[in-house]
Length: 605
Image (cartoon, rainbow, N blue to C red; front, top):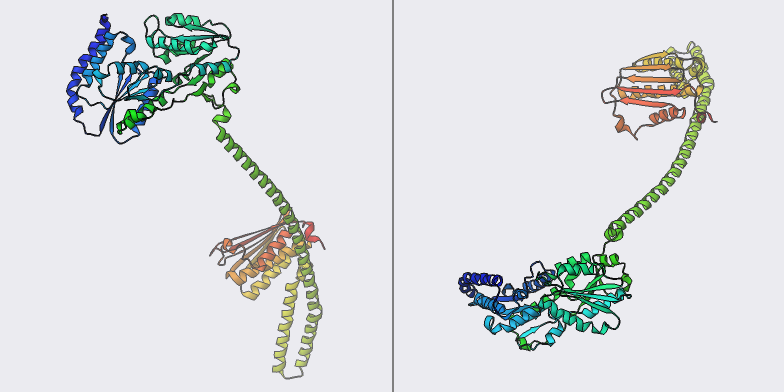
């Protein structure tokens, strides 16, 4: 039977191309000795086919992992479905013979039974004496063939029965099974195989074979299937109208129209609309074939290699299809691979959530620790405030006791010792008139100096003028005395000072004036000091300013003498404040502000 013109054109084009490729054969034959050429035959052009892509990946990745040779992989899609008669296949064989004439081919891999049959039929014409490894053949397909000793492979199991059992497990109420296959010769062979393998189910299920239909008719049928139906999809390489398909792409059309769940036995169908099945893997088939090929290339004789076991299948389902058809995941066999699961917030952000919870727990613990520490700190601060208050109360009582004792000692010095010294001076003056002038004059001078020292000591211990004349007069007198004694110019000024000032306040300001003037005289080297005492309705202020050497207050923190400490403590006990402003070579200013009425703590006995 002659070939159609269109088919002849398809054949003549590659044959003409082979004439252009023949000059390259010599170059290829001259490649180094470690180059190995492997020709991979597939029944149809698998470009865009998920199964073909997986098969090619399995072959390529396995060969690439072996570095003993430089491997040249030549993929040859045969387009067998377009040339079903012997004449067309003979032309295709002639084309391949011319293409590989003069080239050394070391191994042939034939994928699926149509490619293996073609390779066996035309082996002597194209690849005489070249070992063949088959791939992706069902175990039953292998057993029905008588293969030469140098043709080996790892068979698969196209488990139609296992896939149907999975469907019945998920949908035990199933009554009808619609089996879909195309119109190509390879489709017809698998429809026949399906009828054989589904025969045990005919007594409990209605099996309807939707094959030999155009794609439009098929889609119309499956859009209105009765309840309790499922679909078993084999493959569609071509429909009744002669339109060719990649089976996975045909499945996309079927899944978009079907009103019943679809099951399939091919792993590459997962994710394209089927619920799942007991599926075979094209990638595993490619790896198995390449592994056998490497052993042959390494020098093992094919007939010496033991027949590999049937490659096992696995249960695989699409989680989205389970959700779509309301099927229970609990009904799946143990170990089922559930793919395309839509992860919930916990699955997607588990570690973020765990981290956030951990951080939250840590922050909670830290906050709780801080709260406990704050509570302890508040308690400690409260205890400290009580201790400070008690210390101030004791300090106030100590100062009051000190002043009282100073007053008593001063009174005794003034009344007893001072008066006795005064009387002694008078008596010595009378005695001077009767005794020699020189000796008595010296004794009289010493007695007067001793009387003056006792008077000064009594005044320092307790200023009697403070009680007799008031604060302003007492400070003014102090300034005059110190100015005469030390040859220092001390100016005193007062402004709006009332006559009645609380004794504690008056004594405090007087002692501050004593200490401030003593510091100016002893430490500053000042030549001029200004003392100003002023008041308002609420505050009495004392200011002492000198032109001495000054100092850095920051360097004096924590190093102040007892005088500064006593000064600050006295003012603080009365609720006042002390400000000391000084800088090196810039003099010193001491400013004291004390309220009119002293706090109760300062007046406790």
